[in-house]
Image (tube, rainbow, N blue to C red; front, side, top):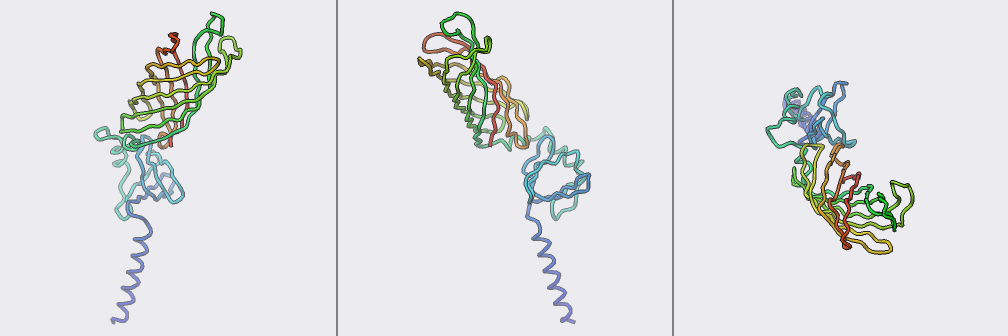
Length: 249
């Protein structure tokens, strides 16, 4: 009899080892309404769904598409009970936790500068193209942001004529506040300079009036920024405004 029992026990042990090693600890199985099963680790619970890392990459599965949600090796549970927990306001929202830490970025934007048009007293609105290198450290809802900028002035928006080329360089230091998952504001100070026939430099308080973030990890950012007033070494001040897009890594 033992000659039959021992091989059978060996086969059971081999099968159990194979099944146990098929998935890593902490993995989940998400079954969507189209019948597909997605196996991987939940990196984050976004407002719209689960950010899931699988063997083929990273994907977002909407809560509305989920039929079943189960831990590997545990009984399946209905998403009807799991999804509200992810969106509950009783605990800290997952997107706040996911933003914590250091995130560098790369951005482009346009800068407007009202002022005199050369030797004429007529108003001009100069526009410049900017390259931005945002550096952010986030504590959750609050973040510290340093944004060096480099750019070149191009045209007068009122007349459409080309202005004398001016190179723009600046540094914006801000305290950012996330009012919601995809919306925030900021307050800080800006120091910058314009290099042409003469060097003009100065600074002033800066405001991020609108900061909109989107994407699976909020990596895309659209910002409307202003510095009011902008004082210079020559004593002549003018407001600055910028609209920019940044990608945060």
